[in-house]
Length: 196
Image (tube, rainbow, N blue to C red):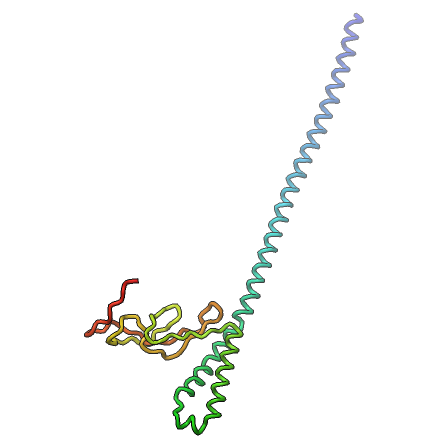
């Protein structure tokens, strides 16, 4: 009967070792679970950090773009209000007769100098003159048709008169050039142009 007692003792040791092993495994499982949770939390925080970093970079780019646009186009209202000043000075110079130039030469020279200085200021601030010529093709991107008339010797879409020059502010149209455009003459066809 001594043998069964020895086996019981061995069974108790095996059972104790199994219990200890189960406890260790449960502890390892708890640690693994906690480690998995920490990894998931780390990944979530890393994702949030990367998104916040991307948002900050996008905000910086947006503010740079807004700043550049404010620098380039912030004065567009003032520039648009100055265009009639240019138009009036140009008209004054165009209507001056030779007799008036002889009598008021210095005055007209002052107007010419003022107009040149105005154009220099425009150029300095990115305002460029659009100067279409009679015979150029009408471009709806930079011209505004004020009227259309059939003119012999022209083809439809040719500029036949320039009423006012246009202006660009950097790459934006500030004011289109105001032009008269030829329509297809009813009686006399225009010259033949090769297809382009």
